[in-house]
Amino acid sequence: MNSNNDSTSKQHRIVIVASLFIGVFLYLDAYLFPLKHTTETITKLSAYRSSGRRGTSNYTTFTMTTEVRTYDIPALLFTELRTDSKIGLEKSYITGAIRKVHLDGGEFTYIYTVGYLRTGLGKIFVPAMMLAALAMLLFFKVIDNIRGRANLTYAVFIFALLLLFAHMELDIF
Image 1 (cartoon, rainbow, N blue to C red):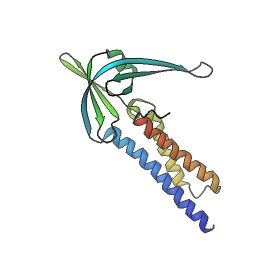
Image 2: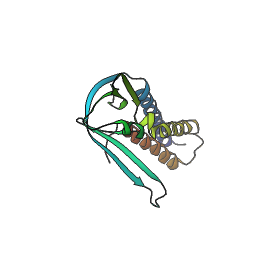
Image 3: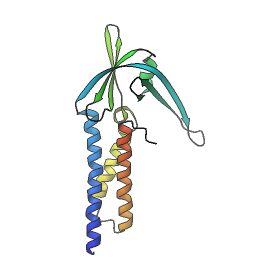
Image 4: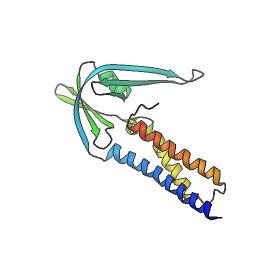
C-alpha cells in the first residue's frame, strides 16, 4: 500500500463513523433527548395513496397540517383527528421532530406515539444503516477494491443523511 491509499482509508473510516454517529443521534433524538410541548390547531387532514409501478403495492401516507407545518402521522391517529381541533405536540428540543400527539378526549387525554423512527419505516432503515456501517468498519481491511470500498462508504453515508432528513421531516425532494 502506498501513502495515498492510507489517507483515503482514514477518510473512509471517518465517514463510516460519522454515519454511525448519525444513527446513534437519531435514536437519542427519538427516545432520549428532552421534549418541548406545543399546542397547535389542525387546519387540514390529508391521505395520499400511492402504488407501485405494477400496482402491486399500495401505500397510504396520512398527513396533518397545522398552522405551523405539515406532519406525517399513523393511520390510527388520522382516524381520531378532526379539522379545527387543538392538539398537543411533543417535539424533540434538538431537532423539532415530532414524537407524541396528545388528544383531549373529555376526561381522558390520549397520547399517540408518532415520528419516523418510532412508527414509520425508520424503525427498519436506521438499524439497517447502522448494521451496514458496523459491517463496513469490521470488514474494512477485507475489502481490497479501494474504489468499491469508497462507493460503499459514501452510499452508507448518503443513506444516513437521507434518514436524518426523513426523521426531521424535511421536504427537500
